[in-house]
Amino acid sequence: MQAYRGFPVRAATRHLALTIGNFDGVHRGHQAMLQRLTEAAEDLGLASALLTFEPHPREFFARDAALPRLSSLRDKLEQFAARGVAEVHIARFDARLAGLSAEEFIDRILRERLRTRWVLVGDDFRFGRGRLGDLALLRAKASSFSVEAMPTVSVDAERVSSTAVRGALARGELEHAARLLGRPYAITGRVAHGDKRGRNLGFPTANVPLRHKPALSGVFAVRVHGLGETLRTGVASLGVRPTVAVGARPLLEVFVFDFDEAVYGRRVTVEFLHKLRDEERYPDLEALVRQMRVDADQAREFFATQK
Image 1 (cartoon, rainbow, N blue to C red):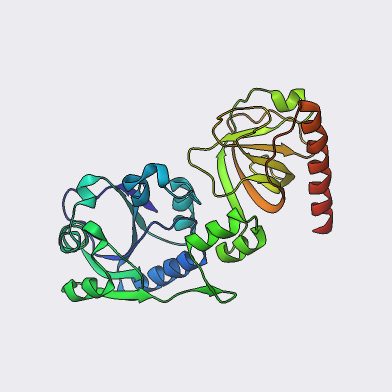
Image 2: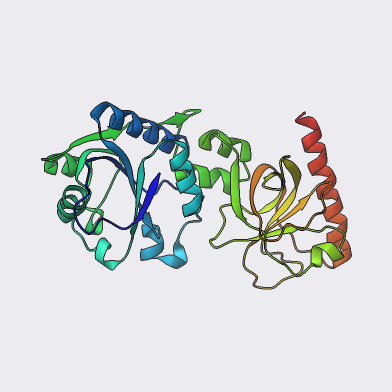
């Protein structure tokens, strides 16, 4: 898969079958779109392509009120590649792009820059300055390409959406979130040096800093990829560590069971399988350590029931 920052300076050299969106989480609705995109591209003899935006438009317009991200850009690119997308165009969402009218977006971006011949969007797709463009306008102005609307994908009679996934994660309903995503919710990042507090307390942790506000918080039973050939299990805390820090940024701390190797710099993926409890502030470190032992025991008991 080829990934491009922005749009070609000149017109693209080949015609595209294109889908457009943020694809946060790459949930089962997004996966259905990607499957339809690659099928149509093959049928029509076009290159399958995806247009996405960085940062998320909501972060551009109201960064302080932006919703938690479900996935990083790298995570999304890996999902796109795994599902057969040939090329991805990552458009910087800035004042210039936000200022394009819907008609200008169609003419300058879809028609001139990307040479689009077939477009797939969700039935609630909105675009252009003030979000005034919709599916009806796109179809009306599509003189040189065809437009297809992706029908709603539902799970257990619920429309699959990034909003639905965020809601399930915020409520601690990890099994429900996994059904919407088609896989367990996970966070991927590089292990960084911490303050060694966990090791001093008898619980050495792999610390993964987070660039964006997470969609969930608390203490969880987790499965860890990236620490060798074997999948590892453990217990993770995700949050601001109210007992040991004040005003801290969210941090993912993972205590991996039966594992004691230096892992700084490794890229790991942490799957959240079961929520044990919310974050709490304890009166002292002794109380915190007692609770950490309980958390570890409960996580081990959870994994024992999964065999």
